[in-house]
Length: 221
Image 1 (tube, helix red, strand yellow):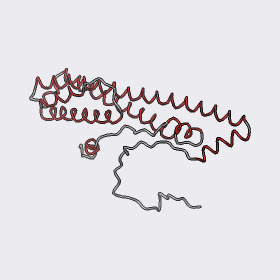
Image 2 (cartoon, rainbow, N blue to C red):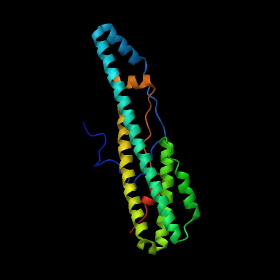
Image 3 (tube, helix red, strand yellow):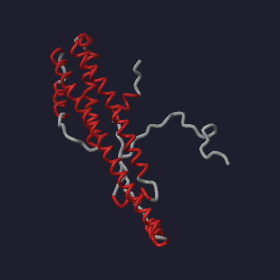
Image 4 (tube, helix red, strand yellow):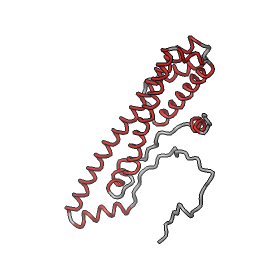
């Protein structure tokens, strides 16, 4: 039998394709077939029914544990975003003392310092705003090369770069946990039956903004 997807002779999109994360949470649902399946287990013998019940309890506990890991991953992103806002606030203040920095930049940074825990949508939006503010500061560096000679500014810029990397690592960890959740809750019968009963839905992974995607396409050299 031939491969259904043949990467050698199949159609090729030479222009490439841009992709986006779908902002949609899918509820887990099971039909009458799943209910019949459980009834059959109990009707055959009590032992299969008990075993399946124990399996469901174990799977439910697994989902509860995984949910806490996802929360911890989200909190890690929040904490690192907060640290980056603080660093950029100090950086913007240092830059403003040396050059005429856009005054709206300080206002935007102050608005980001809420210190609150955010949901997935808010977390994405705050991350986009932080990136926009960072771009404004980077623009100041391009316009005023002498800023690079200031030791305090150089240190703050280095901290910002390190925090950017930490945010990327935290996002990858979060998305890995979300991916595991989204796959596991759809495995029938045990996991999906438990997920449907608990009202679980798929989760939306962390995404980047359209501005960042556009920037990634630019020629840097």
